[in-house]
Image (tube, rainbow, N blue to C red; front, top):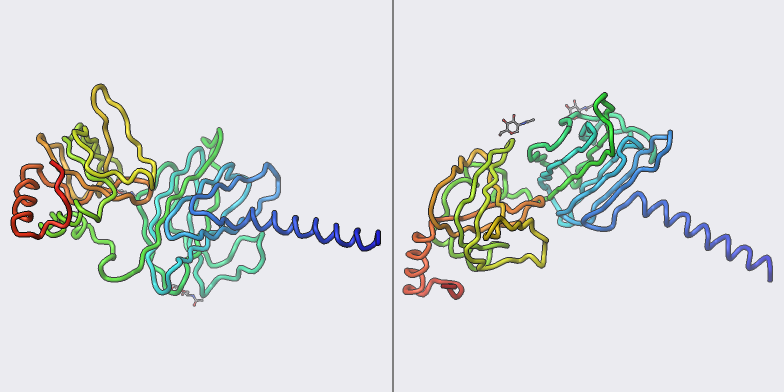
Amino acid sequence: MMACMAIYWTFISLYFIIFIVKAQNICYKCDCTISEEYSDVRAVRKVQPVCNEGSFRWYNVYGGALRINFKPIFRGDFRLCFVLHAENARVQISQELPNESTYSVNYKRPAGLKRLLAADGRTNETCITSSGDNIHLFLEPERTVESTGFSFVDMKFIMEKNNEELVYNTKEECRPCTDIELIKAYCSHSDVVIVGSMDDVKHIQDQTDINIKISKVIRNRELLIEGPKKRNGPYITETMTRHRQCGVEYGPGLFLFTGKWRLGQLKMTCSPYFNDWSLVSKRAVLEGSMDCPVVS
Ligand SMILES: *[C@@H]1O[C@H](CO)[C@@H](O)[C@H](O)[C@H]1NC(C)=O
Ligand SMILES: *[C@@H]1O[C@H](CO)[C@@H](O)[C@H](O)[C@H]1NC(C)=O
């Protein structure tokens, strides 16, 4: 009986040990936190996100390296886009070439790495197209003299089906919307619809940040993702971003702004002058092509 109990308990504790090790290595959430232990042994942690869109927060990065297996939930070729922010660290981002990889065990640097870029601060949005059903990225810290203080890396990613519609194209992203697209953006395709004016416009790396003084919120799916709303004197402001190549500059007047969340930011989509939107929506109501009630 006692022997039986002992075997039982051994089995239980073994089960727990295996579980803990696995839980450290694979992240079963869309937004994960990975923290290295302070140790002389550098370990490679394998991480596989289970969502098509999400983020990693990796603390104390000098304790190890990260091997991320991006495998979307849908099947087929895809495009992985990410923005990485490295604080008090310089991180080398490489892609494992599937034909050259000799990766076998957990705690070893893989062979056949193609260097993509190094991050020290925020990177531009970077996109890679898959050939096959996954993309392996390898993140390793490079110690620099200036690297003092608490190190962390924040990586936001999205995996999208690689159909023609989605192929990244700033010309497509920057062109003005048609009336039909505008009505869709207003009624259903956006996460945020607001009426407001530009407070200021800043160009930072590959993007333009447009700070908006909000006059009226028409729709805000904030329950889905918490947004960075700020109070600025009597106004509530919201920041939307656009690719820098779209060449957005400050302009006075009232606008209808529509936006969608992507990589942790509110990306500006169709955003006409409010007067232009009024004409479009009035005409659509008369023609019976308005998809939803117009908030006045
Ligand atoms: C592996 O693939 C890369 C890119 O497709 C190519 O440049 C390289 O020569 C290949 N290596 C081998 C050993 O086939
Ligand atoms: C980031 O994007 C900006 C603007 O498009 C460009 O000038 C800059 O060279 C890019 N930086 C890197 C590291 O590619």
